[in-house]
Image (tube, rainbow over all chains, first blue to last red; front, top):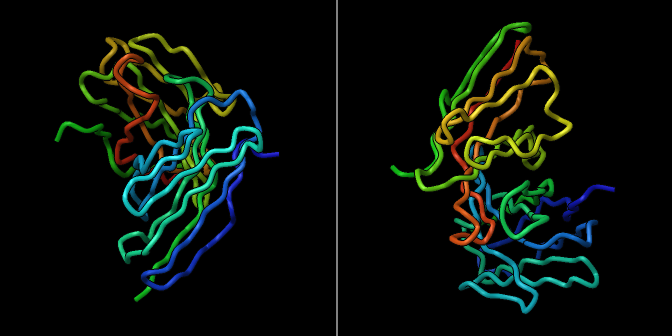
Length: 111
Length: 116
């Protein structure tokens, strides 16, 4: 079983749609959780950290369920500029060591 | 630009040749990481430095791979006797000391390697 698994995608949605990405992780010792965004042929960039209480940043909402080892990302009112690959990421310690990435889910928003 | 920089951005080499990549992290970051990403996959961890000490190495880092960070600033990743399977994007990332960060890593633009 892969350490981080994501919805296979791709997701093709119209502008204004709400889209949700799901992710599960296998190691219960994972301590930090993130969503990264990666544009085509570019480096990954941090979109947001994910906290147990859930957190929101504008149109983006992230949720973490430690008991189920499940992470989600909700994007509301999708924009064309949201088209990218979204990577679910976990870290075993609060800082340092490896980030463990899922394969990513590709989102394409069309007008 | 004060982000992570990598050089070269692209490298084409013939099988069997050696290649070396360089990474310059964000100046105040003491932690440096190397990852490899192939098409359709997320980045995979290769190795980690805290200052000049190499503290972790992945099983992916075969004997043909070596990484250094001699003065705790820039780092190099060398691949000896390249194979076609080494073709990938090699990403470098850095992060600040624990007290100043929350474990997030800042990635450079990557070096895209093609082995013919």
